[in-house]
Length: 115
Image (cartoon, rainbow, N blue to C red; front, side, top):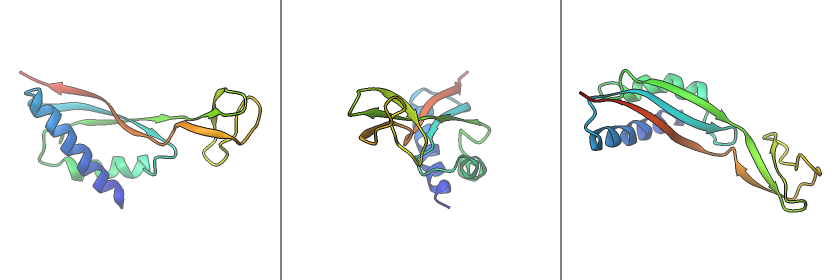
């Protein structure tokens, strides 16, 4: 389950940010995860408590916001949503598209607790 390794890297990043901001703990972690990221959100949620145990993020609420798959059409220039298995332009239906979002896993927001 590579989601545990992803969570461990996330907790490392969150811990560094918390230390830089002199936070005692982390209340909320918000992630943006695209359908093409290769990360399964449900597995990430279940692996998070194991990775966060004993850290400043141990009591943090993990919020995952799904991000749509979006493509840029090289034929008509439109930016549209697409399905993960059909990266076609939503305007003209062409397949000459470039992925512009949907493959990301981003740390979008942290709520830190300081005294």
